[in-house]
Length: 96
View 1 (tube, rainbow, N blue to C red):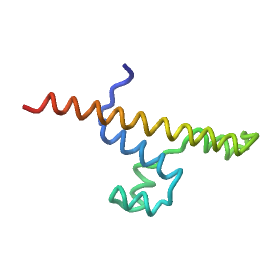
View 2 (view 1 turned 90 degrees about the vertical axis):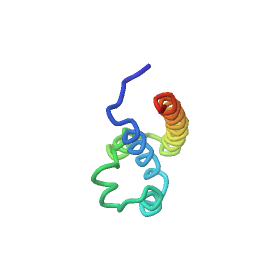
View 3 (view 1 turned 90 degrees about the horizontal axis):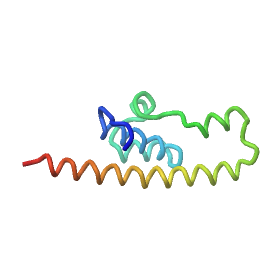
């Protein structure tokens, strides 16, 4: 089934914030999640493999890389929604 996370909600929030920061202005993302840009950069934002490839000049076609990044973000959104549904079901079963 995959690895178990010690803090599943925190992990989902961190991954979601990283994905949003790649696509939306930092102030909007911080407003949505309720904290400052300083907190976002210190605790939530993660460097992605695609960002590292672009910085290293390893991307031959930026348009192709952008399409791949859009696909990755869509897949991440689907995985995040799936994880949230699974956590809600587990929480509902555990709650008396």
